[in-house]
Image (cartoon, rainbow, N blue to C red; front, top):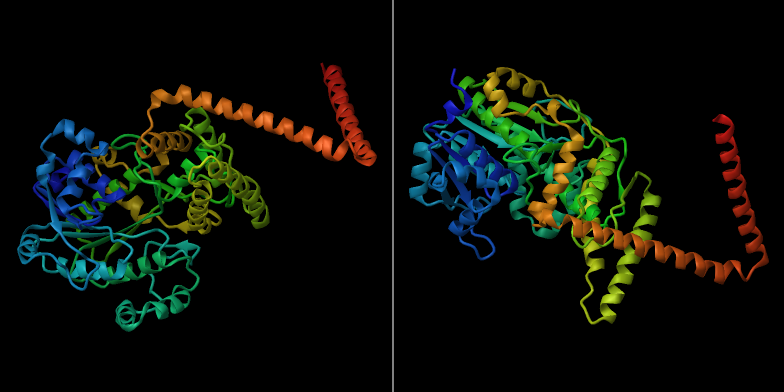
Length: 503
């Protein structure tokens, strides 16, 4: 049986979402570990004033492709951009491009955008025209069925028929859609997880016509090993929260310390995806196989541990120009969290913005905190509870690989060392998201020491102020103060005496 690189040799692959975080890692891994792949067709839309070719050119200049660039400087010749607009009624791919795709594509990797159902339906229609298609791999999310506590590797029936829903939405105006959305999504937290569940069902309906695999990653984070540890290129999900904690902006977050933080490294997801493409094409399962790509049931790590290691990492490798020293706390209590948001977030932001106004600058800190609170609120649902995911298919697939493939396309999360991974993740946000130089760490540490001294000075002045205003002017307050001080003195004396007797 052909190994994974041998299978992809000479194959043409169609990738959607290739300019996104996961898509770029997929393209890089294919080019590096399957160097004989024939061509990668990527669907790209013009965006933000950039043409399709400009976006692809910028993507290939990314540091992510450094290893590929060293091995093959002409790697870009294998990347063939195809102009498309999957969010419009019908594909706006030229007839020439359609003919090219239907004639030569062997594998499709589909990572849909937020319009999951419509885009997925359109790509499935195109896939059915492809004469040599061997596998259709759909990237979903482990939280597509987050309204269940135990999630098997099966497609659950959606609460509504997707085709009927799409037909209904076509004649509804935006106001009606907003009104019915809460009733549609039910006990799911947002429309994203709801439409992901619908898209899975739509894909499954084509399993008699196409060889299909469905990948369900949990919260996708920075790379674990490939192409190098800690690669990340965005503020989304936990990355923005980590950076906010490292900058000293984030001081409190509502989550459960004991809840499993089901982070999954992006390279694990991509390795599993490529292995699933190989298995789907070679073995052609009779039904669509679902792969729950998660860590919680195999190698669990908790949000309380995440908080500890993130703060420790940023104290060792501080971010430049931090607002405050890193010191964030997790609480599951709503009132305590709101108190600390007021005291540690909004009040300092107000004071800082007031200072900026007085100095003739544009206030910005309150806006930053508002954006942070919005990002945290999106995570709250997933950081406050646990799920159980079955991973039998992922284990089965691992057993089908040769020892060499298992090493080259590693998705065995039992080997993941969490403290080391979180350290690399934090360093990755510093190097690749904020573009900070590691050689500037001594200066960043000096800045943290300066912030520490400012804090000590402020606390001292605050104690003096409280003494002068409240305690020095009230006999009762002074009596309480002296009583507390005497208790502390007696406790210290007792502790010292006990230590002497023990010795």
